[in-house]
Image (cartoon, rainbow over all chains, first blue to last red; front, side):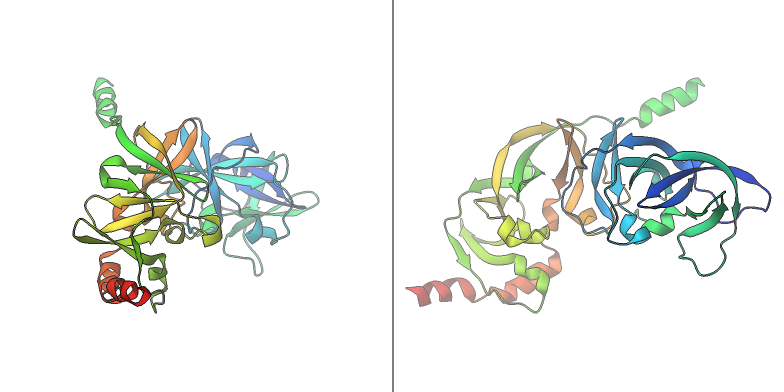
Length: 149
Length: 176
């Protein structure tokens, strides 16, 4: 359950979970994703970490909720309905992170293409699907969170 | 197999319980170790100290308290945690046991035995790592367990000693 390296050899196909935020879809390596959960009000308390909106209690774990929509599509992100729960490898160990998403997710098998053009550093590759190009996210880059002090 | 089994047993966390005081600030519930608190009292006896400071983080200290021959710096918990003042009116004062700090809070809920304090998830990487010892789970709620030593740093104590040196008595005398 570790994050896929940023580049893969051409021709190698892998599984990805596609998820919508607003009208756009993004992808994470399927190996990182542990579940899709229904929206539940996150529990909040004061903190100063950007993007974090609170925590969920899930199967005995405390799961931080990171709302990445403002970074990915700006402040006008529509209501999120589900949580995509991903497993991240931090220096202090593996940790689940809940990402609020706008709708149902989809599992797909595709070849990850290298990033072309000027894309943000959190895009680790691209998936060329039938009618769209989907950005594969590097969650750690996105959350800027080599976080264990 | 047997060896790894016994290892995992040894590694499993011991569920230590501790008594905590649950308090609120702007409706948010926090816990603090009961043995860190010497007294919970009303707001009588607070003495204003200088309210302007070049060091903005010290704005959370606007009062001192003289008690049993010692002076305590009074930290507004709302300001400490970055909660807007209007949202966090204070009604109680928690006087710390081992440091000269008293903390203004919205209210005291109750004393409660909390189980193991779980570490803050690594995704939290800001000031909260200093503010909290971790999280306790109470009735399916994650409650931050406050680190009493984080209300004021050693540097802040030093600055406050200068800032509030003349304030208490002179303000009281001016008002008389």
